[in-house]
Length: 484
Image 1 (cartoon, rainbow, N blue to C red):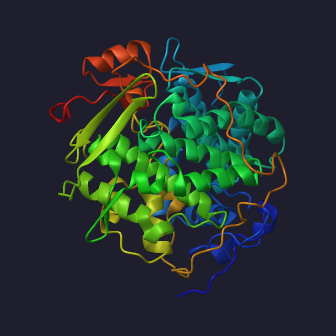
Image 2: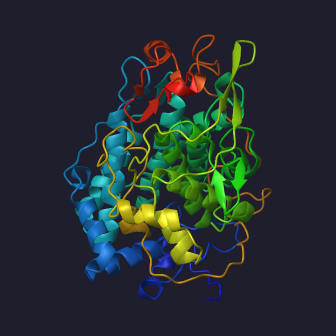
């Protein structure tokens, strides 16, 4: 067992640059307890970038194929030009969220290529995309799906900006202002109010994407209260995305039944990917959510992987309470794992595999098999737009690490809930108000708020037709179990 080393103790790329080759292949430990944040410190640290660069330069194994996958994606080209919008709409007339999604993918992927190769043409491309959007975007709109746009694209945008932090010409302050005024308020409001619905109405993926956004914005903006808000919700929030609600049953043998597996596999795998994103981001700031509650996340993702690999899994029946107070309510009982979209491919497994197996030395046989099956992971639309843009992807390049087991000692979070960081905010977090159409629930009586939103999508869902809202997540109203 390696002794715990605080390779991420120094905040900022300059402090981490000296780690270099010494960190390559090492199992990085969480950031040391400190009031400061480690930067870069969302999905990737400077030690991660040093490892990627050295391994790709040496033409080593999975890093070589992972980088080739990145370089071959059209949104990784340095000639990509942004198409910024003042208002982004998801799930309603004028839906244009794909424009935002592709530009974020291009910013993130060009930023990665710069970090790996040193080619400033890619850095300039990423910088220009981020600057163009922060100069123009003011509003996220649409039906209930606007919360999905805020969560998914909020955490993704923050990751691209975190990589570019400190680069010449990148207006970080303006970008932070956009994140704090456009993305964070909607995700925070959703976690607090759930769009006016019952806390149990929206599935776990809705909560998890909101947690990912709040956490990522908090770190990007050096705002301790927002990080605490996200971590507290993950551990004890009221909605379906709180970890014990997202994975409510632990079966013998260490399998944790995920609620979304009873719904359909597209959303179950979305939740798997979001769990990995949240846990890796927290880990890089010294907070071990991977290991929280006896590694509950590991048990849940192993369960989802096993089912999607074609194996049987145990299933405990549970009843879902849906609707909105004073409007309508209903109950639906799930008695088995859904076969809908079973075996779907998403670039979500490498981070989980490399943490649990290569970093911590734990057994994760089904996650390991899924990672091998999908490898090398792509991203940026490689898997289409029906879920293919929900994740940043390219995990074979970014997360692959040589096996080097770190201490099993649980890290101390980088600050207590009473601490405050310097930067954009401090003190206790107050959930923000949703300024887009208030917090009134979407959809009429008898409709599933979490699945339909409003308007034409609700009408399609009422017929039992699978509706694609905004092209990313398949949202449908569940009828009888026989319809799944």
